[in-house]
Image (cartoon, rainbow, N blue to C red; front, side, top):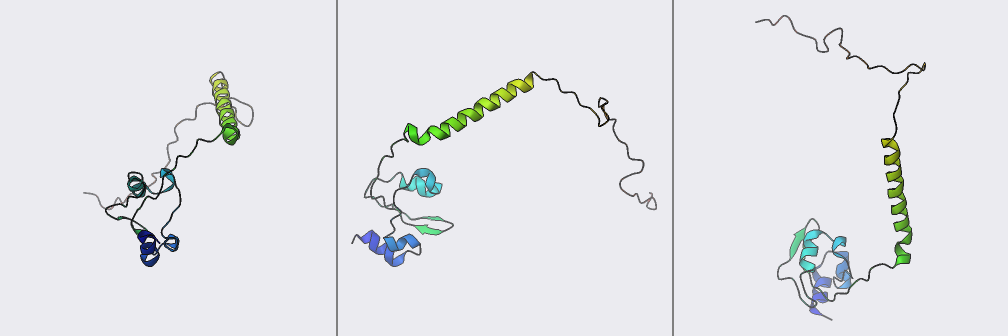
Length: 134
């Protein structure tokens, strides 16, 4: 058994420690940035020279293997692309229609809404203490 896996099983407090510390394959965006920065600079077989720390504890990183993830096929993204394009087209059509409209506002009785004058309170909103005059 490789020494890294043995040490992970013996000392790790993480549930993955029982798997020899093997996290499997992951993309950069699937792990926290500090971890990704170290993991994606190492070559297969390399171990990070210093452990890194986050809110979950200390981590020793070893890269076993890399693989290239193939881009998704058209069939895999067809529905998502269709939905996104329809949303963009609908938003554009609504924006274009709104730019050509004139909006008239009416009161409940059918009369046009006039400009509402500023409302001035009849009495001050804060009670003044007139007894403390200079």
